[in-house]
Image (cartoon, rainbow, N blue to C red; front, side, top):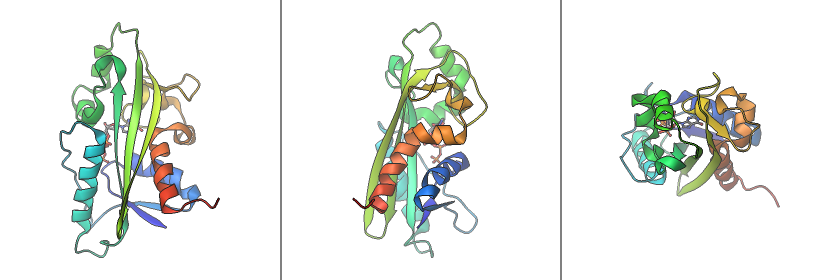
Length: 197
Ligand code: ITT
């Protein structure tokens, strides 16, 4: 089954492909006439609202093209830091581009409570259906950036399901076995193709 992932982030497509390929799905980046959708991300309270806005924009993007009836996937993620009241949360993308990871570490400087979680909301939509799946990966914010793997906030996030390394130190396979994205995508894949009981 072919799934078109509407995203500007190729790292997400690689991760989704490694998670969904073994389950029998073929994941590709959504491209229409050589162009990927560029989302206007609403400054919303939650990543659910952002994901819903992305799926509406993606469906509008394929309207009237030969991809109109395809299965489309969008996903919105965020890093929620306990001691910062859930910041950056839905603003994670903007915050990464502005103050970046050094800015987050600066905000956390001297803070002993380092709990945080990554959350993902994935939405698949096809002819006559729209389905949402969520995934959470609990963890801690490290004291420094460690690791070159992954992307985004990976070098400062230590998942509780791991062995103390940051996501930036995990291989793609290790990250995909525990990530918020993997959990959300597993839920939507089960909706698309329910496992036989
Ligand atoms: P699209 O909206 O085009 O899909 P994006 O990179 O803007 O791509 P998000 O808004 O979902 O994606 O991501 C919010 C921020 O969280 C952004 O700065 C990402 O780099 C970061 N992020 C998302 N998933 C991550 C992950 O698995 N590891 C580290 N950082 C992640």
